[in-house]
Image (tube, rainbow, N blue to C red; front, side):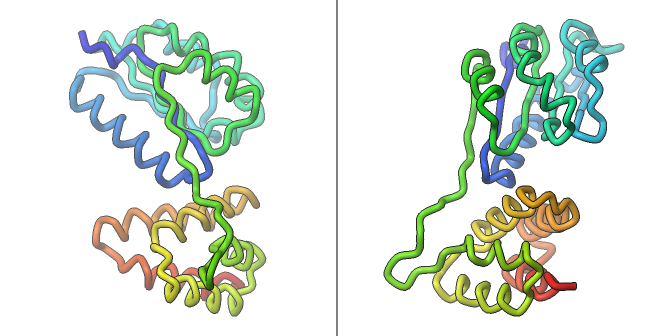
Length: 215
């Protein structure tokens, strides 16, 4: 039996792109180690507390283990209320649970601090611009306000000041989640992964996205 298949892992923070990559990489690693384990994924749209309860001590049809990914389930109001109270049970379960969230509220933070074997926080840098540097927060605000002209100008400043495309995508994604722009968030995640897979030029992809911010 593999010891890391009876643990609770949590990945969270304002840099949800990085947190998501780490969570999915862990899922892939665990599934490769234990290909007979059953895999389940719940997100805000598919949240079902009864189904989750069934995975706490249950077994897969052809396997003695479950690997369960809870992908930002707190976007669902019911899940947001119930997840903190479920964390101890997730930790005690003989199965593995991987929790992926953005910025945690105080109640969920306390529950995770007390119970998770591994908690990884991924934070976007928030340092203000210095010595002519560029603050990517201004760009994120412009995109969120659908001000495409200002967003494009700020993006060009970001590129010229040396800001990394990954940092810019992460900040824009964080802003999209903050203002609940699910369409923009999905576009950013797709852009990020296609860029890293070599299917798209990430810098040019971001530029096209900010130019269409007002449409």
